[in-house]
Amino acid sequence: SQTIHQWPATLVQPVGSPLSLECTVEGTSNPNLYWYRQAAGRGLQLLFYSVGIGQISSEVPQNLSASRPQDRQFILSSKKLLLSDSGFYLCAWSVVETQYFGPGTRLLVL
Amino acid sequence: LAKTTQPISMDSYEGQEVNITCSHNNIATNDYITWYQQFPSQGPRFIIQGYKTKVTNEVASLFIPADRKSSTLSLPRVSLSDTAVYYCLVGDYGSVSGTYKYIFGTGTRLKVLA
Image (tube, rainbow over all chains, first blue to last red; front, top):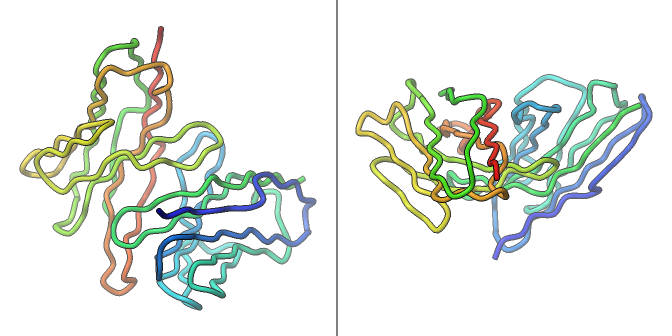
């Protein structure tokens, strides 16, 4: 069966520091991968998606970036965090139309 | 991208059937309708998905009328543990992107009371 991992589960970072969140998927090949952000009490906002290694599409302009160095690995990064980057970050995978979500990373930027 | 409209919140009592209706007037021919459940500080969990008519699985039923402009998620005999936010999504398949993109609204906050 397929499993999706995200780490860390919780992260507290100072403003201006770099960020690296990692997501890996097991049990499937060539998945579509997604990064979402969820602000408190809000719905999920799609940030990036990838249909293959090295292929990244950005949905929202921001100071975040994403990379896909391996088939089942998706990384969300920032060179300098802003206060507004705080939120709940979720990685998801799909093969066709159904997306399956990871446990999420709670990021607090102070 | 197709958008959805659903009630902001609903209250129910344990053991009752709960129906949450979602409208998606601009649904496209290729779009599927998907429902997710989310508990606080957890990722959304897939509940059910359909294209037309009725779909049933071990946890819910999904009713979709012929015009597909709305859908109703039915949760039979809810319990306290069903208290969560429920999202109705319509997938937008991009022939260029080669993937489905979803717009998440604020969902429906279901509160199940004892």
